[in-house]
Length: 338
Image 1 (cartoon, one colour):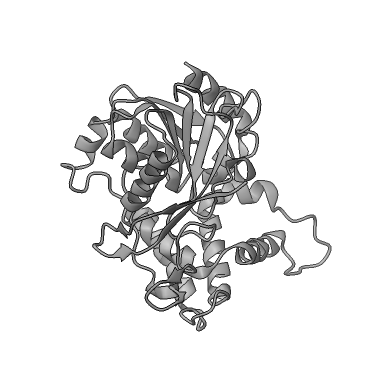
Image 2 (cartoon, rainbow, N blue to C red):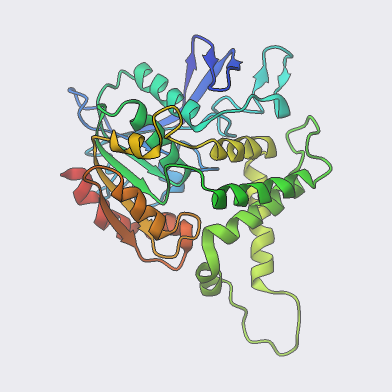
């Protein structure tokens, strides 16, 4: 069940702009231990929500690494999202209308600060494990860099300490597709849908990669040449699927937030920020990930004191962390329980 925290004060963003009202949507699973020692905080990725059990199958289950019988699992929906936390479709108190394109820029550091507000509201102090995959890893790194003494363990999956030129270029390609839709910018929640569908199709190419497509979207034998390729219908379907559950203004907001990520900003550089991490850390790469390639993940692990590197073998690229739950559980259950 989605719960909501309505912060009683304004929230000043890293940009200097402020949100006069802040609501944070969140989910919890399991029961908080009397001594508060069993908290596991999950930071979600780009267009996911706070319901981890919904978007990350076979993780919040008995015997899995987020076992709710053992852990009190918390996940907060991120700033700018479509799923209940303050974002572009929220009411702008200054106008009485949704923000749309007037929603202020949000950084990954702002998202981490919002998590800290929710933790305080929930009475959570020390956190046993902080988990972040993809953009969730960005938030996790921002949070642990700000409070290195708060966490016992850190789990980073398919992520990085900074938005690289490669990932920014992926995001800009998606923004270009959205801006090419003449309806983008119109003050209505269903604006820019064709652009967002195209953007999603671009993103999926990088999330799945050649192996993912060639494994799942191969055509049956053709008797005559035709254009009804499975890969074409898959791209259209995935774009339309996102449009049924998301809005373009939140999508643009989070793409822009992605590009702000740099845990070294105002902390003496990336190496210094990573060196400050005190938690027992595991960094998990995916063999075919082209968004955050294994070499980059190994480099990330090498710069965190005492961190170990592990790798999932998957043909599904960056999305492997959503698919290869058996491998993840084998890696992470003993780590989080130790």
